[in-house]
Amino acid sequence: MEMLKTSSGNIAVLQLKGRFDAHEVVPVGAWLQEQVDAGRVQIIINLEAVNFIDSTALSSLVRGLKHCREKGGELRLCCLQQPVRVIFELTRLDKAFTIHATQPEAVDALQ
Amino acid sequence: MIFADLLPLHRQEFEALATAWLRSGAVGVRLLEKGQVIGAYPDGYMAVSPALVVSDPDSGLELHLHGLNSAALHPGADLQLRLFGRMLRAEHEMETITASLVETQDRLVALYDLARATRRIFEFNDLLDLLTAESSRLLEANGAFAVVYLPGQAPIVRQHTQNPLPESHLLAAATLYRQDPGRHTFKDSETLPAGLRNVVMSLLPVRDQVFACLGVFNKAGQFSAPDSKLLKAITDQAGAKLDNALLYQEVILRARLDAEMNLARQVQTALLPQSLPTFEGADVHGVSIPALQVGGDFFDVAAMPGRGLLFLVGDVTGKGLPAAMLMSMTHTVARSAVRYMPFDGPHQVLERLNKDLLDDYSAVGMFTTAFVGMLDPTARKLSFANAGQSPVLYASPAHEPILLEAQDIPVGIFDQYAYSSQTLAMAPGDVLVVMTDGFNEARAENEDMFGIERLKKTLKDHMHLSAQEITAGFFKAISDFSGNHPQDDDRTLVVLKIT
Image (cartoon, rainbow over all chains, first blue to last red; front, side, top):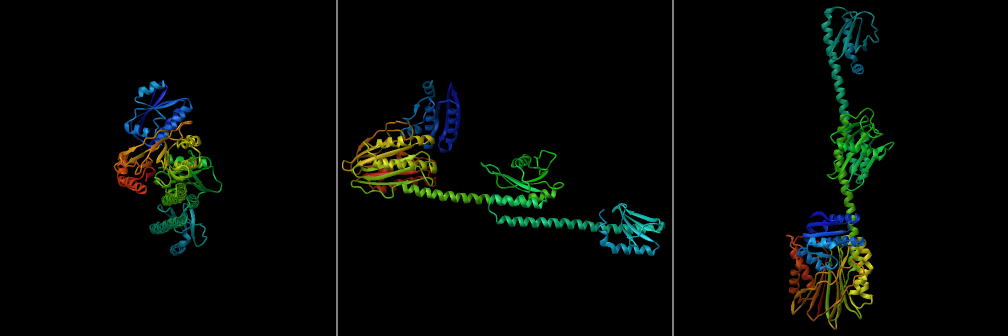
């Protein structure tokens, strides 16, 4: 899986590409931890190019969300493909995360 | 002086040669090597009279024939000296070769002994100890050490010497060698750490990911090329032995882990229902198959007086041991809440789970999905609460199977989350199947996923059968679809059929 790390103002943005499963959780988890440790707790994860997400990957996002909120920040998701959106809906994690249609919309919401 | 020691062995020949000269008029004969007398005849003859002197530049020998001065005798004497010199030289070469053969033989025997000794040793460190002790002895040095870097572990340092050196010094020497593995001998004048005067090193060829070397240090004089060769012979042979010892250790460790995992599996299996209740008005069946030896899925089915038929299915994120540990805890809390906690609706079981386990789940960054159902068999009314559990399929003879989507987020994410209950009026022949995502996410050899639609079709094809047969139908459909693709995730389902 590819990881593209960018930022927009004080918002850290991670764009993922490919299959997001147990094998890819470690680098993403490490990146999230790094952001939170550095006090960058406004985070957007762009899942536009992710075609599958498993429960271990979901739990790494939940962990990131909790850590951000503990520090008064927020983790938002954007640009979910249909198969990934379905997984969020099935597990009702769409209620736990705020999901935006586009990255600019997510950025606006966090600013 | 190489011939002085050899001459006594050829005293007879020397005396025969000297006697012949005495008969020709000489009064005494002396043989000199580099100006020093190594033989005289008659015994102890001290030179007084002048002598006819011949010398052999090849051997450095001189023959002094005292009492003779005829130049005519010179060629004969010269020839005799050359022959005698050649004989002594041949003798000397033979002695040298013999000595080197004996040494080689000694070393071969020593290598053989080492090989035989290593055969009986299976412990990695014991092997290293034997290697350091033997290589130090064979190379006649003060000590030897071995350094082994196993991936992800602190380096192993073993040494055999009277006064052990600090490990850091030996590691530094190993690093010197690692940086320049083409070189084998190192001397004090260079960058050797304190305590090391000279070192000869050789690579222990264990396996690709392992750097290991054997060093012998502090020999009187210097290490020679044969020392370096001998050490290489030792390490070449020892590398394979060490690799075997590592494998042996790994096998033992794996066997121990396997035994523990088997035990964990037994414990986990014992947590799941051992027998399923029979129930008037409903047929229920449940099975859980972990992907690894232990898993994060759980289910429970119980008939409780006054509560009807209760069942729950849950899936702790992840798999293997971490998920299994949380599963055991979650299962215990859920099971007792479902059975004994007073509640108005199944959602309160989820709230209880969330309240009790949120801290633990947060600490390890995991969560669990869960479905809690309660069937009132007389009214055929099912109350249920669903925290992210999927897929849940419902089919009735009157309509196609449908997916019942979860209403609430999984357990272990947010504090104070308000879960909800729903009700479903069921009729005879209706079937509810609560599954974990190991079913819809099952993959075929070409990586296709089984998906929800195939699950619906499987249910449609089997819904006229008993709960147990429907269960078997799902597992068979998944198994046929997956072929040789390994099971990625735990698979658990509970089938409830109204009779």
